[in-house]
Image (spheres, rainbow, N blue to C red):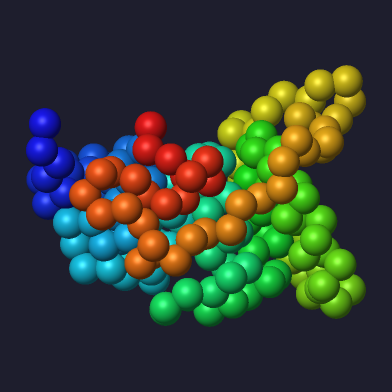
Length: 173
């Protein structure tokens, strides 16, 4: 079956505009890699934000990576990366915990305090999305099994084979 990214963009777009988390996440991937649309990392961030705000841990992890590394139209913002890695970890992405802890070492105490205030506000607004505590600790507080993976250069992805280059960080569902 031949892949039709333009048709996929149309269908994912329709689902995403109706609030479908998977559609929002897929549009983020499509805009990031320019699949059926012009490459636009800033637009990708907007769709990943919508999905992450609804509790998609993969989108939260990708946002952490994008803000940590920066990209065309996406400035490098370590505090924002820390926030999204923390949210991804809260949502059960254990590999986000290592990235979060590495960034914590780089942030000033004032920035860390401000970011933790934002994180706590997110937790209050979205508490129903978080995993239930296990043994008195959130599931995300367990030891991570692997480090977060870096986003590859969009130019290095395999063309035409449906590989998005993000690997485990955000593979299609």
